[in-house]
Length: 446
Image (cartoon, rainbow, N blue to C red; front, side):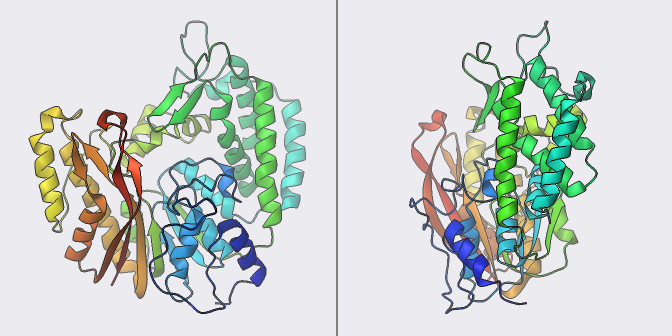
C-alpha cells in the first residue's frame, strides 16, 4: 500500500499529536501512556472534546486518537489492517482512515455504529449543503405529529397525568418534525449524518442529563425546561460543527473501513482477514449497563421500539452487568488471580448488592477470553493486541482485570504478554471515592 500523503500526516500531528512517522525511523515498543497537550493519559478522553470527528458526539468512556496512532507507531512497521472489537466512538476507525489504513470495527450499539459510519462515510460538503437547504424548507412546512413518537416509553413525553417527563410536549412535537424530515432523505449517508447530528443534541435539549450512574433529572427541571427554539439552535450548531470536519477532511484517504453492528463475541468469528493491530477498550466489569447511557438516543431515533428490543440489545452486550438475567459460564483457561477473586467474592456474597455478582465476574472474563481467542486467530505473526482495561471493586474485593487477562492470555498460548498501569481511577462513592482502581494497557503478541 502507498504511504499516506504528507499533508494528512501533518493534520494528524496537529490534531492527534502522535501520528506515526511512516517516512522516518521506527521506534518499536509499547506506546507511551501520556503525551497529550495537557499531560492527560492517552487512554482517556480528557483532551478530545474539540478534536475533529470526536466532537460529533460526546463520549465519556472513549480512549484518545493519540492512543491509536501511538499503538500503530509502536509496531515498527506500517499496518495494513486494524481491528477494533468495541468500536464505541469510532476512534480506531477514523484514525485508521486518516492514516490510510484499512480497518474493521464492531459495535453492538446501533446508534454508535451509525456514528462511526457517519464519520467514515464518503460525504461531501456540496451534498450536505444541498441536503441542508432541502431539510430547512421541508421542516418549515411540516405539521407536528406526536403519533410519530408513540413507541416511546411513558416517561419520555409530557402529558397532564404525568409527574415526570424527559421532553416537554412542544419539544416532542418539534422532534417529530425533525424525525419525519430526516426519514424522507433518500441518500443513506446523508440521512445517517442528519440522524447523528440530532442524536448529539437530544440530551442537551431534554430535562435529563447522563453521568456514570445513568440518567438523572436536572435540578429544578420543571422551572427550566427546554424549548423548540433551543432544539433548533443546538441542532444548527452541531450540524455546522460536524459539517466543518466533513469540509476540512473531504479529500482525506479513503481506505476500506468496515463497520459491523453486532455482538463482538460472535462477530469476530465471522472475520477472516488478518490484522496487524487489534486495539480496543471493552466495558469494565463495574456492573453498569452501558446501553443506559444511550437510552434516549436509542428510543427517540427509533433504534429500539419496544421493551423486547431493549432486552435483545442488552443480551448482546458483554456480561459486565447484572441488569438482566443471563447464563454465566467461566473462562476455559487458567487464572490463579481470578480463582482467588471469585472465592473472595463468594465468601462476601451476602454483603454484595446483587448476589450473582461473582458469577457475572466469571462470565465477564469468559466473554473477553472469547474475544482474545478470535483476536489470536486473526493476528499476523508480528502483530499486536492493545487493550485498555480497568479494575473494579465489590465489597472491598478488587477485580484485577489486567492481571487476570494476562494470566488467561498466557494460558491460551500468547507468547508476548505485558501489562502497564497508566492511571488510577476513583472507586465508587460507596467505596470511599478514592483513587484505588487501576486502568492499564495489556499488550499481547504471538
